[in-house]
Amino acid sequence: MTSYTTYEKNNENIQKIMANIKDLVSKKLNILINLLFSKDKNGWINSLKIQEDDMQSLKHYEELIYMINKMIELENVKEIPSVKIEEFAQTLLITPELISQINKLILKQFG
Image (cartoon, rainbow, N blue to C red):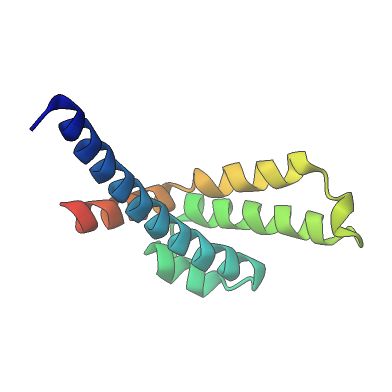
């Protein structure tokens, strides 16, 4: 193969892998966001395989719920500062169990 053909094939493979990872992460995040907004603590614990006595993980969950409650207090969604939404998203994305679950999903898919 020519180097350009090899480059195209590698780029195509990379794009497929990225699409699969995005799909896996998106599905997991959708589940977790739905659990948070429905305030389903047991679902959150089960989905992330958290021990019920893991105080650090439960504190993180409570922090996310607090952030949601603060945003819900505003009557008009447009009044929610974008910084609050970004803060919520960042806090969700650094959930240690989420990172672990995403890693497991990726390894299962590609390992």
